[in-house]
Amino acid sequence: MIVDLVSEHADPLAAIGSAVTGGQNVHVAGLAGALAARGHTVTVHTRRTSPDQPGSAAMAEGVTVEYVPAGPAVPLPKHELLRHMPAFAGHLARRWAADRPDVVHAHFWMSGLAALAAARGVSVPVVQTYHALGTVKRRWQGVADPSPPQRVKAETDIGMRADAIVATCHDEAEELRAMGVSMSRVRVVPCGVDLDLFRPDGPIAPRDGDRCRVLSIGRLVPRKGVDTLVEALRDVPHAELVIAGGGPDDEEVRRLARLAARRAVADRVRLLGGVARADVPALMRSADVLVTVPWYEPFGMVPLEAMACGVPVIASAVGGHLDTVTGCGLLVPPRRPRVLARALRDLLDDPGLRAVLEKSGERRVQARYGWPKVAEAVETVYVNVLSARRRRPATA
View 1 (cartoon, rainbow, N blue to C red):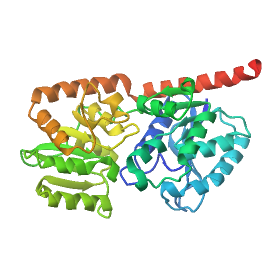
View 2: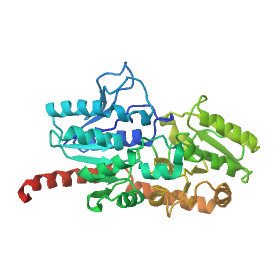
View 3: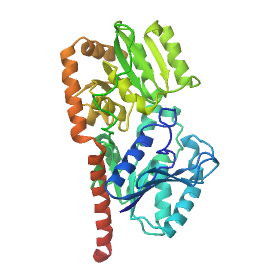
View 4: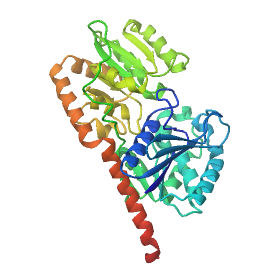
């Protein structure tokens, strides 16, 4: 198949770890590569953010990234991109009129708007993955949510018009049901993990001293709940906290540093800043436990990566964590530092429990979340969509 992925803000070639890159970048890159490994020809369309970017770039064998001119060629916050989607859609429409793909898979709601508009004139089926839903974001962030006010309505409309929806977890599927999206067109397919990179054997980052190491890694934004972990550290005196992500100029990094000082744990908190993706597995393997306790989480790739490295996980009982961590890690409510501290003490003081969670987590990731298995499931969605399209005229 010729498969075009639309990822308007998440460039699969972008460096991971800044405040504007994260799980969607990793997901699109992983899915594109795994689909190509299955013999498909894949093009990823993402917005041009630099005048130095070429029109296209090879990502891997069978995968090309095309940079779409839509708005100024500079990085922009996601909430400022909506006004540039008509230009993005116009570019796609011209591109597909000249070279029609078999199926389009849009990632994020604004990509869905652009893909559906562009596909209308060339009769290309569109599959949608949201990666996050405005209803959930607004529920947790309230007035702090910078999303355009029309986001929820647009996401609902996309859900009614797309040929199929790929939800990344069952919690998201239930949110879509509540929005009125027919479950007959929703398929749950999780995000994947690079099992060649994230594995239990391999280099281990160095450690100093005898304290237990608690690791937090990912984008540093308030909703990720890293402040909850800093608060919890007060009641876990035999542990150090290593925080990877962000940079010295990020306000969230400064806020966490101030919080650690106020809570008198600054001597046990290390803010590493961004870590190259190739170095992440070694850092994970150096930890006694990885903690990820966001307020909400559409899927959550970090706990799976840690589990693949044989590291036990404590995660907030939200979103995709309910699928991935339940039964092979510890789940806690978000924004509850005392509960988190108790879970940390229980785990760090029980080597037997850690060993059980290490093995069960590794087995689950190996069985369910490798990219070849995920790509096979997504391919099945594409095949079913194309089959339904072929049958449509005969039943009209």
